[in-house]
Amino acid sequence: MQAHLVSRCLLNQAQQTAQNAARLRGLYETVGDSNSLKLHQWIHFYALASEYEPDLIIEFGRGYGNSTCLFAEALSHMTGKRRIVSLCNSSCWDEETLPKLKKKGLVDQKWLSTVDARTLDILSVDYEEVVGDAKRVLVLWDAHGTEVADCVLAKLMPIVGDREHFVVMHDISDARYVGNSKRYNGLPFWRGQEAGWSGESAKLHLGWLETVVEQAIPAIDFTIRNGLELGSADHQVKLDICDNAEVLNSCDSIYPQGFFGTVNHWAFFTLNDTEGPYTYPRYLPLSAAQAVRQAPRYPGLDHQIQVDLARYRWFGRRSPFTYARVFAKMVLGRYASLDDARV
Image (cartoon, rainbow, N blue to C red):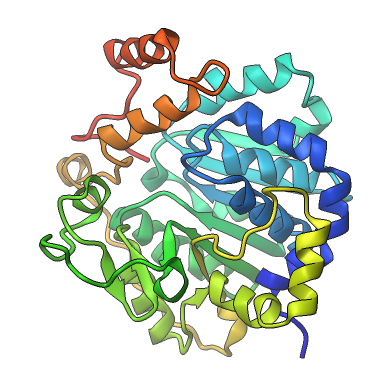
């Protein structure tokens, strides 16, 4: 039996990835956001895009542009018309990451021509326009909250459901492989993603799934209603790679240090795995007042600051420069508001 896409990509793209290792590492380190994606997670998504060869990638949530960068690099090795539509309220890609990539000479106009990075409210997007005539669509669902889930499941999925598509959800772990205790450890049960991120409540456990992000619940509901199970990338890798010592050793030997990991914390689904007719939730538009109160949010302010404390380092260590950068961003209001920030 052929390996599943999420593990097959690691096998088929190993040699190409190893040959391109210096450039890939340079791109990853220039983005400099290891708190959001570790290198082996970054490479797994790169291999997935390279193997799947989509003509359209839709990115919900961009931040500093980790996934934007890896997707653009993957598409740069393909022929034909291909594009990335990246949707986020953050301007960090344009203001911080892209200038660094250009300064180091890592990108050119051809590389950038596939990237349509839009800084906007995800809730306001015309998804018919975004999808257009695309035939194979890869979706990275990395903006959190039930309102974004509304857009993905009620607005986007009816458009792509009858086309080739594959939806990836980051920040979802497989409890069978992360080794975390299922004990509450004195915490209340899960009270939403902000409480989960801050450690004020336990994480959410549903079957194999362990997470703090709210969209996991509507995603499970959607897949069950359509006769699917939300897939675990880590479980698929175990079945196709880890359970075969020869295959596992091959991956370990081909991939450079830090490029290959068996636990990468993401889930997936596609309606292509089942026959229709499919069922979709009705989109419920929010009033302006509701939109402000219920807007999808960035991770909490503490999380954002921790990301920057990890990014702004001098010779691998925090320095006065590190704290000065974070303080300046706070003074300038560069961190997303916890009250009305839109992802």
